[in-house]
Image 1 (tube, rainbow, N blue to C red):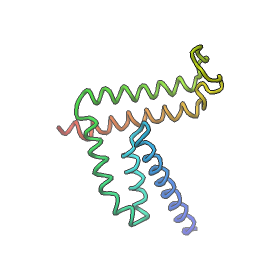
Image 2: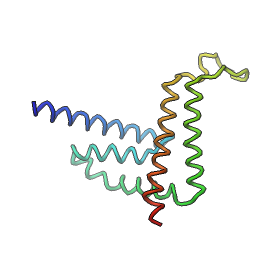
Image 3: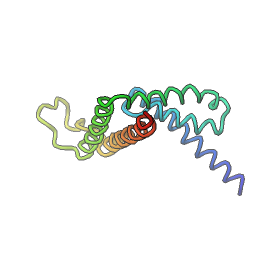
Image 4: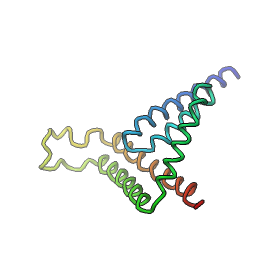
Length: 144
């Protein structure tokens, strides 16, 4: 039974680690805290793999620098928070799927395609971004 528990735990940790790495890489170019998710995924993988542990330090340094830079000035904090709220609002709008406007040039089936699946992803990204802003503010701004 211990063998099953140990392997199940390893599978969950590795699966979550790889999921966070993939999401982090995607969020580097898409909205979201890419470096922080990449760091979290690599930190999980570092518990299982030596190669991941060796590559963790530069990612950690870049993620912490990005977090500190994101709350360096009040305009950055305000713009980041507003962008996060726009993501959440866009996700709610996407999920509710208002009527197709007259200016929409494509077939109506392409208007806000994906429904709550896409909207939920946008809402989740906005919430994660707000959480990261709050974390960065408390970790880096309150020290100054």
